[in-house]
Length: 239
Image (cartoon, rainbow, N blue to C red):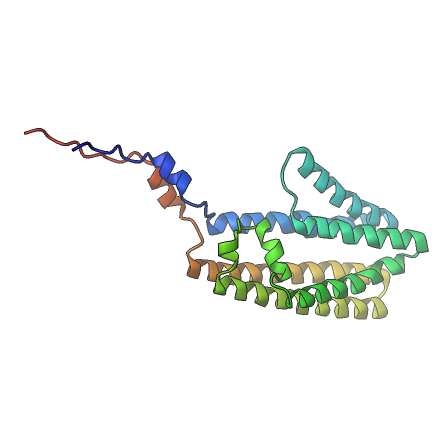
């Protein structure tokens, strides 16, 4: 009887779907938040304290476009969050320059947060809520995975969570703008919104990780390494 050659570890690894481990997903989410949210907020307040509001507006916008350009030059995909941040900052800056009003610049987050919250809410009526459209930035998605009942429920719950968060942020920003001085407003808003966004991101990752573990979606680095080790092949002994 002819013996079939054993499948090579490389071919077995290639046939298996790539499933990133939890640390890889957390690293990807953290880098996306750092580039699209944390750095612009810290940069804006630092430049605002040193050189005034218009320079700070320009610096935040330049960072967003620079981050996108760097991704294009290095042939790496920019996250949807980074594009969304750049679009919102562009609109805020353009309207503020045309109206020559820094107050309008700080009012616009109230409007933009409200619009984004509305988009999240409206997307709940579609087959693909907004979180489902952004999930591919952080985890490789295909149709079969996106259609799993737990995954679909997760996307809907997270979409509702970020919609409520958008309304809360818009309300808090409007209250701060009406009751605080510009310097106090910028400081409190920068710290508060950064804290809220990071906390919401942590909650999002925790909920997603819980569902991913239930669905067996995280790869195991040790198991992957073991799969690549040469396996002992039994050799038939002739009598």
